Image 1 (cartoon, rainbow, N blue to C red):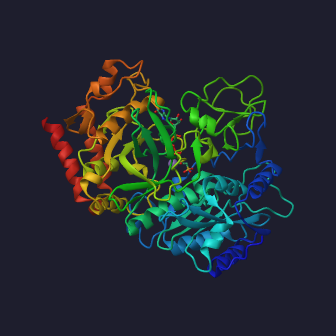
Image 2: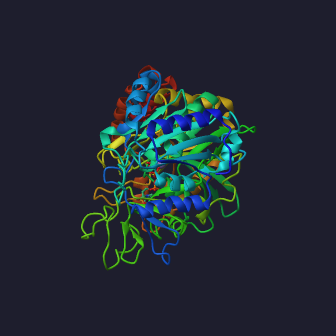
Length: 600
Ligand code: GTP
Ligand code: SPV
Ligand code: MN
């Protein structure tokens, strides 16, 4: 590499890590196309990646991870702050020095037989005041290739760092050294589950990840840096780092409004951000689909920025009908992880919109699929560059971000939570964010799918500090502006089911009808009625999709008083976890809800 690195701290860190991990060689990454291709070729040579049929999926590859390494592992994710109080009750805490000692033991010699890549990257568009620089050390070519798509990897980042610029060190190893002559030979490298650690040192702004090669455990730019560490920085600096999509809605009259939405993992962010509205004349464009960094502009409005450059999206359920824009985004130059392989060298998954083609299908475990069970893993993902999305907003890399008119909170709730409801004011909106709950999905390894868990602000697995302090931060941040300039806050739920277990709401493109009401509310129109839980549309205020009867819509917009009373009890339990850190304002919101439900 021609670039001379002048940053002493960075050089010393790389040397230290190399001494500890003992790789065969060190490669400084520059973000070039050739480098991307080399990383992919390394995987192909090791039989860890399968080139797809270039006539079907040009420039695309299939990777199968180990069946034990298919999603984030929250039980192995740690916030190693100085004290357990700083990590709070929702995070796994570990004493930082003890954890480092344990992990140093694991890192010792762990890169033997492998290449150590040094990957400099920037999160956030050029010129953004929020942009952060990270340098990830990794022994995984899968990580290198994915980081090329997900973050701004370039040698320019090293130049920008100069001799002493700030960067976030991100140390990663798959935790599978190779003996002399040993090859991966098609075996996804990772460490046994109990040896895995995804560790964050918030005071030092440092990340150490060992033993997993998958997604958010290994692409340290994403959940580790842009959420867990960034949330701590945001708290200290007065902004927000959120698990949110960012989209624009353009009305038939040509007015453009921006929204951000927090839904838990695998609960529909990517789908909403790429929505093709069923309503004629309405248009949605994507600014971001997983992470938003949000700060106040000089005009007192909240502006949101997508720090990433690609999508690591859920494949199952993605079809030409449910998400045509995602299907177009992944036509080429895409890395697929844990989907099925067809005989003609294309990908397939459950819910792709057509039957699995005839001929041999290789399932996500690499075995011939006997057509029982799922061929793709439920958390199978695609990694694709954002610029390939046909509805990417032209302003998606605007360094100032986009001004947000509405914030949405939602989750998978088969009952109780209505289709949509507007918060009365900011603190009520923070309350709605704090009580987000969802049926457990396949995006986490540790929990039983199907049970409801509270996932406040969709940040439960991603908040780098005490969740009670995080609630406080959300309440306090409003003081940076005035009520009239703050976004309106809404709660949505696309996932209501009938008693028979059928979807009560068609979702996907039909969600545009709800966005329409939200835009109308932001513009001071749109009919709403006061209810015990917030401002709700009347049945006439929502355009009713074909196939949804008036009775269905009434059900979707009804207030299930008994359900809500049970909800209040469950919120009390949820809130009890935060003890004295639960803001008084939220306690008051809960008491107010309880009182309204009792009287009205
Ligand atoms: P992460 O990347 O894990 O943060 O997830 P995400 O929030 O971006 O979720 P995504 O949009 O990928 O959706 C996950 C799953 O939910 C997919 O299988 C979708 O098909 C399904 N889904 C998304 N939107 C809807 C909807 O409106 N209705 C229904 N029924 N399912 C939906
Ligand atoms: C999520 O689980 O919310 C994801 C996927 O977006 S991962 O990057 O693996 O965390
Ligand atoms: Mn996510």
